[in-house]
Length: 191
Image (cartoon, rainbow, N blue to C red; front, side, top):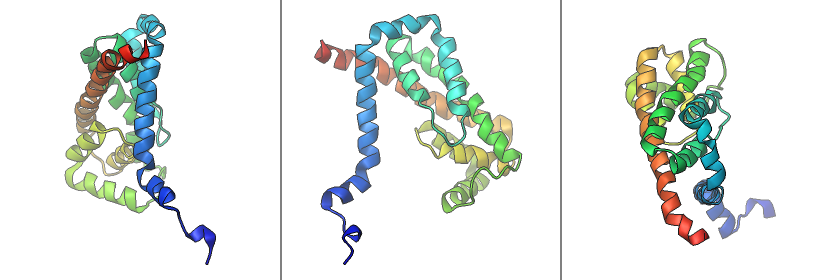
């Protein structure tokens, strides 16, 4: 019997839960960093909402390769008005997502036609607006595939931007408020 074919219970557990553990660890790490470096983040007020907007565009303009723009929204929510941070980010992020849409619209073979992409493309053909709204409202790397599929199926760009704006604004507001609350919750423990 091949030793590599067997997996330990810990290895099996890690395969099932590694994404959740890494997400939780990242969230806690960002929270601690925000609290520890709060003074330096306050110094970023010079860029303020314009910086949040630009990071929203640039962070979502990459196709497939993730850029942690939500970390900036989280940090921004801790030093700026979280409602405005969410609204500003919610405007910038859909504009950045146009790169994926345009890649699909141009017929570019950016993505292999794998099963995940075929499912998303089918969802776009059936319920495009709902698919875009839901996938943009939750942090996930699959949204790039939805943007490409939207362009490929000829989903109207105005509806694409509206669905993305609604979902991404909701997500950004939640993340910004979590950033705001994290300082109050974790700050006293780190002093």
